[in-house]
Image (cartoon, rainbow, N blue to C red; front, top):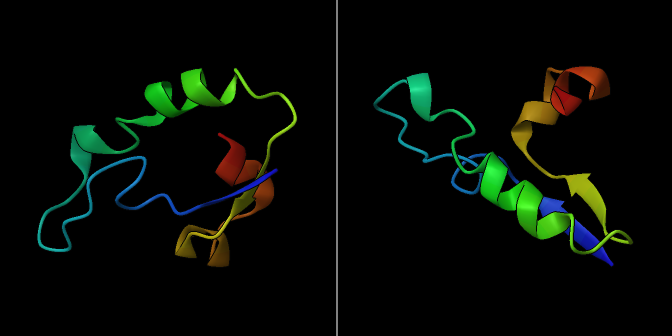
Length: 60
């Protein structure tokens, strides 16, 4: 099973008029808890963040 993951609007709110600040990746713990229940899931980063970051940077 594949999950195509976009960061903006999924792992944190997306508001182009305000900086993310402390809200960056605020939903990540919830996402991680759910995904841990499905060890065979593969995640494909479909976020535009992948365009200017390495895979190692995205994993952090």
